[in-house]
Amino acid sequence: MNQRLAILFILITLMIDAMGIGLILPVMPDLIREVTGGDLSQAALWGGVLATSFAVMQFLFGPTLGSLSDRYGRRPIILISLFVMAVDYYVMALAGTIWLLLLTRIIGGITAATQSTATAYIADISKPEEKAARFGLVGAAFGVGFVFGPMIGGLLAEFGTRAPFYAAGTLALINMVFGYIVLKETVDDRIRRAFDWRRANPFSAFRKMGALPGVQRLLLLVFLYEFAFIVYPATWAYFTTARFGWEPQMIGWSLGAFGIAMAIVQGGLIRYILRYLGERGTVLWGITFNAGAFLFLALVQNGTIALIFTPVTALGAVVTPALLGIMSRTVSDDTQGELQGVVSSARAVAMILSPLVMTSVFAAFTGDGAPVYLPGAPFLLSMGLMVVCGLVYVAHSREAAAP
Image 1 (cartoon, rainbow, N blue to C red):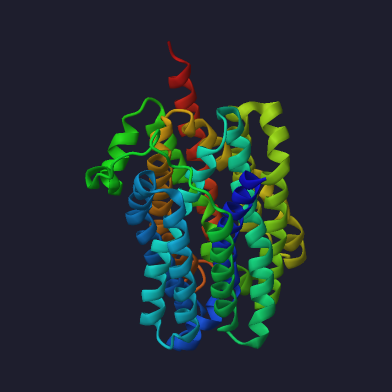
Image 2 (cartoon, one colour):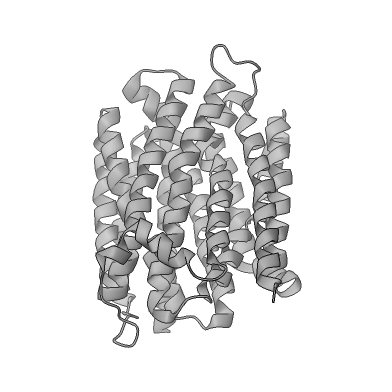
């Protein structure tokens, strides 16, 4: 029972991470225009800057917090971060300038770097054969967060652009109290590892993990996949506003539909997919499906059809859990935090670059002087990246099968 409550807390923590992001997505176009006085294309560019600053901090601090949790334990790192996260959201609620919003996104990126610590906790308490499926629960938690986050954010937007931030901060505080009660430490002397700054920075951690057989290409695949998939949070609010004229509430409902489907896929359906296709087949299926989904979204003209198709796109959200399961089995128990920190940083590098690229592509094809009006252009780029992902994974599979 104690382990179940601990897992529940970890999943709620990850859900709040997603919910916090999802809560603010529907109001970001209006909030940025409110504090800058610019138009939608300019708001999209600022949105890319805010998302990138958030991701830079995740990149820099993912391995650091992961290594700190290998030394001092998962519990204190997670609880402290939840408290700082709550304060950060309250400050965002009061921000009156784009520069204060930028500062809060920087701090928020540091607190969100504990995703690696939370995932390492799941690895600590899971048997090798359980890891891929339980990492699916991690994805499902994010899916549930995206269900309630955008939906609640869209509804709270009716009370003003600041209301979602107060809600996100309060959720983080309540969960911190719950974690203080139920979370037991999993790091003991058997797996405790001394903290070393040379291994705690992302560059050294990448070198160490990249030296492990088969991990280097998988890290590249994580980066490319996340780069492509970030097109959703980076441009969805702007894309649907420009293409279909959706209001914040409709944006929230669409993201909520995606989150429901993602929770179903990663929380339950993935177990059957893994059983039937295996981890390798699951990765290939997800990559292929996502390529088709991105192409469809790039070209769809009807908002109703797009809304119906949005939850279907979640059927491809099986790649990351399968990859995490494969990678987690390649390292020892005392470096699970470091591995998850490196994975977090690889994803953060994608989050650093992708929002800037995706929002710039969006602005280039929707702003004045655009060669052709095409709000879906970022999705075409993501489709091309999925093709590259497939090639990288096939190369990895052939290398792993070689004698």
